Image (cartoon, rainbow, N blue to C red; front, side, top):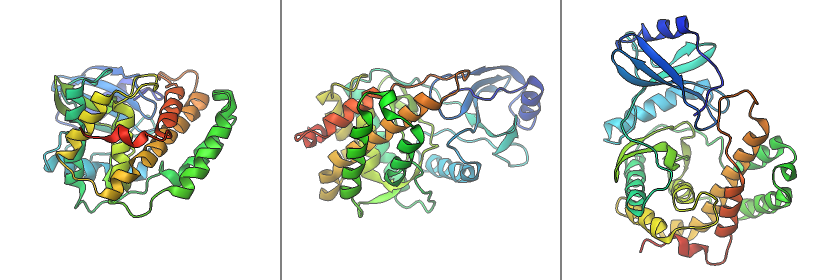
Length: 320
């Protein structure tokens, strides 16, 4: 989440007037994340999230996201509805951007999840995957492994981001291209289930949010992304075995991975680490100086990449 585009009060009032959610009390920008412009919208009818779509989110993909969230909600997953106005329209235009008014879910995102919370997150991911096994929708993964070289090129001088990074990225891209699997179980995945995209009350998951990277890919890759974001210290230098095991245990309670998926997890996790290393490096270079946005340091994902490349990386994925 971030704020790149500001909304004029008259435009906001006109937007809210299309819905049965009362009148505007306040609308405050949310600075976390880097993808879209997000606001906490308070009206006389309650709290909502207003999102204006920027950068990597294509307006043409928005009907997919609306349908996906409807499917997950109907399947019992704790996801926020994208509200429809009185005419049944979910996708609006505000300040020259596509926009949606989204249900506000209770809970907080975590900075330092406990093992119990990691287990709950793993179970929520697994339940979401089960709900998506028969989902008919699909979307090409614009941040999948075939696109990482282009992100690296678009970033520019990687050595200016972190000394020696260019050679590391070149070697890793070549390794992943040569070994990336082709036939693992796949369906739509979240692809960005970091702790800040999970809302919790205590040890209970109350919301899975920010589905704007959701796409068709390997379910085990989604698990690898979640492992990389939940099981490590903030600097990426330490994988907490209790958190890692709890996450895997929670997932295993919902989904039984195949032997091929288990064997592929270290490689998929290397890919996950490289993906976020590259996109964070790109945003570090290209985020506008005047944007209300918290840029994210890419170096913790370099540390994760190095850990997942170690000979004993498979041990990080044990469920007990």
